[in-house]
Length: 140
Image 1: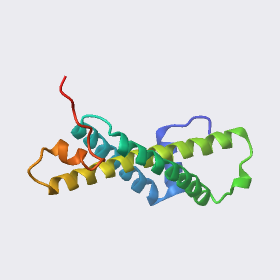
Image 2 (image 1 turned 90 degrees about the vertical axis):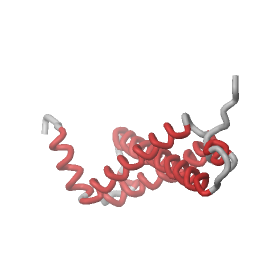
Image 3 (image 1 turned 135 degrees about the horizontal axis):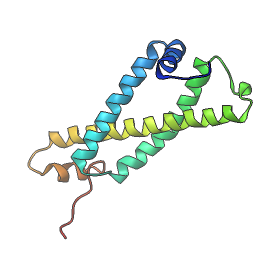
Image 4 (image 1 turned 45 degrees about the horizontal axis):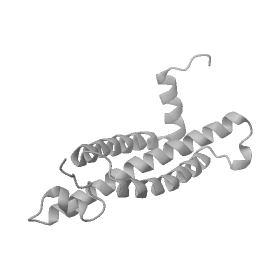
C-alpha cells in the first residue's frame, strides 16, 4: 500500500469501527454545529463554560484512548515505537477536543433553555446571571 487516498482510509476506518464510524462522525458534526450556534448567539466564549468544558476534555481524552485500546484489541503493553506514542497522543488530543466542543455546546444550549424559561429580563442578563451564559457587555 504505497498510496493512501480517502477511499482507502474510509474503508479501513469502516472495517475497524463498523457503524460507530458514522455515529461518531454524525456526533462530531452535530457538536460542531451546536458549538458554532452557541458561539454566535453569545458573541464569544464564556469563561465559566470553557473551564468546565476543559475539565470534561480530560475525561474525553482518556476515554478516547481507552476506546482505542478496546477497538484495536491491544493493550498499553503493545505500544512499542515512538509512532505508537504519537498516535496515542493524537487520539487523546482528538478525544479531548471533541469533549471540549461537545460539552461547551451542551452547557451553552442548556443555559439558553434555562434563560428562556425566565421572563421579564433581556436574554443576555438572564443567561449571565447563572454563570454559564454570555458575559455582560459594558458600554464604552
